Length: 167
Image (cartoon, rainbow, N blue to C red; front, side, top):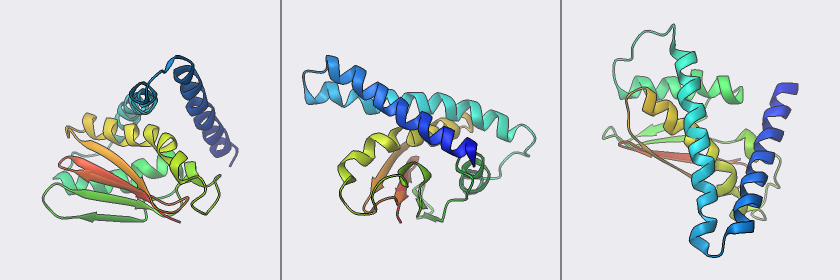
């Protein structure tokens, strides 16, 4: 439990630091959007390293669906101590991962009050997934959508992954 709290606190402080640094220099909306890119890049690198460690004793995957199942179970459990709640696919390279109680959003209100703040807290996680998939040999685009807090959905399309969180 203590390590979960430390990870959540580190994540919140990392987001706050990146936004504070960029906001002091940003003059346009586009420059402010670089914060999301910075956080996503940090997550990408961490995702690459984590997937290397987690898969070192794992047999190779048969197909993309096996990789996605691994991400939803083993990878997600190693990071967030729970499995993805739902994995959907159209069998053409689009996958949607759904987490109904996303750990990095549970500290927020359950209403729509902080909905516009959610993307900056999801950028790192999108990078984690994209970095992990990259190391598994899948180039992807990972986005996140939040319709209600603290739920999150991550659609992943061929490879563009969409990561959705709901509560």
